[in-house]
Length: 151
Image (tube, rainbow, N blue to C red; front, side):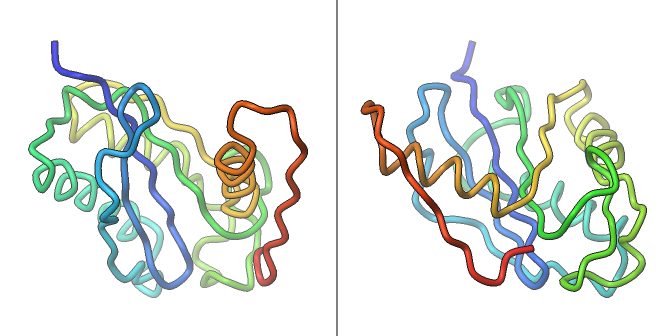
């Protein structure tokens, strides 16, 4: 079996990025795939563009959907409940109340031909966890992330 990979989607208000790591946490590539989020086209369109971006990322790195063990989505703004947007100054009103977790999960499953685990969270929170892991490494030190401008 091919090596398992995990894909990260950073769905920013203006730019979305896709990258991936191998099962051991090492980067597949230091080159992120970046494109306009195009949030004015609505949430369903944005979700479709994320799936296409993953497809392009996989192709560019000679990888397949069969290797994808999970996807993480970091997005700006608050939530009404897990995976459901609340009002955000960073996104158009059409995103308020949108169940991004269910919609993205379904789109990933459709494209991959199987269910793919998906985790959704605030970009500032998820970035803080990643930065802490990178900065702290294997120590037990404390790390504080200050992200001005994040919701």
